[in-house]
Image (cartoon, rainbow, N blue to C red):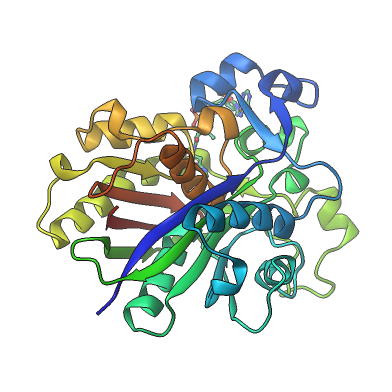
Length: 331
Ligand code: UT7
């Protein structure tokens, strides 16, 4: 049975840097509060006219180049986002078109911050089943156009950023290489802890002027509840993945956690008893780009020479839904 290897990584972030200082112009917040509570120093926001599909295209071409492949070599696209360019169709087909290819399936996946880990699990199943050999997996997010930049929305607005990350996944028969296992979870009892109520197909019309005036189209979050669950679920699912493979935390060479909050990553690291150099953190520069954080962080780690053949790499995510999961792979 073939296994899934990551043969190329890439990312794209908009060139517009938004500092904490800039946010103080829009809302009652401070650089000190944001840095102390989240670790974030700046994030990227798109300029008018940039789409998720275009960011995804740039990240994808970077990943394809890294893999030594062309768009035409792909058998399928899996794209994870909570901020699609349009309600319909999904961003996946726009990306396919932007890449200049046709015919191959484009699968859109909605698992919020866990989108990349969920997507990797879906792609891995296709590859192990022998259905596809080369899959492009993308996490892309434009959060900036959907944030409440008034003081009312400050708990969320300071966290999120825009960006795209991509990975080329290829079937490999190479002994000991590739995805060892994937572990996905969800608990819908917490669906409204971090959510956006509108626009909603439950309502006719899907959005009203009153709902917008009340800001009900903006995401809302019980930050403490998310935090509390994230710091227990992430270490738990990493341990689950390790146990499934007869491994321990000492075997991990690199942990790439979803970048939600530097304090969350730090607590996860301590609970797993990992040294700092084994955990990737770049939230300081990009904020939380949701489905894009893990592929961006992974691509940067590869660029920085932090991943070597044979390394045991663990990806772990937690987010809205709640959804969470981990992937263990041998580089
Ligand atoms: O991928 C999943 C996405 N979400 C997350 O991972 C979020 C997880 N949660 C968190 O990261 C943290 O809960 C936050 C960073 C969102 C908040 O940090 P906290 O330490 O839990 O603060 P808090 O919510 O308890 O708020 C403390 C105070 C409040 O004021 P009072 O009631 O004590 O007067 C907030 O109103 O901080 C206030 N506050 C702010 N102050 C300045 C909330 N947001 C801000 C802000 N600037 N941006």
